[in-house]
Length: 55
Image (cartoon, rainbow, N blue to C red; front, side, top):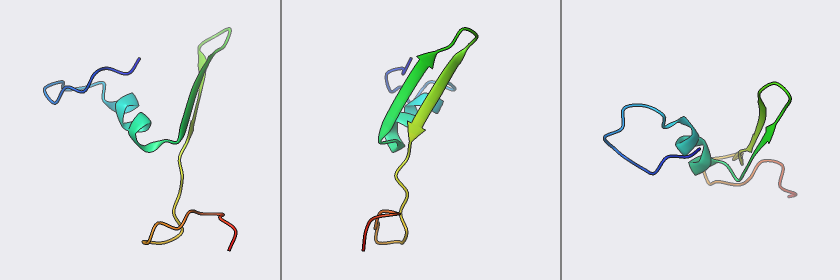
């Protein structure tokens, strides 16, 4: 569960940070625990060209 932003909160910001940088996020319940998938776009250079983009 993503908590509402709260600068006074000392912990539990991890998922909030993941959601801020990922382009896709999924959670699937498993018989024991859960499976989490987060897709993060990478850049090839400082100008922000996306990795793997056709030239």
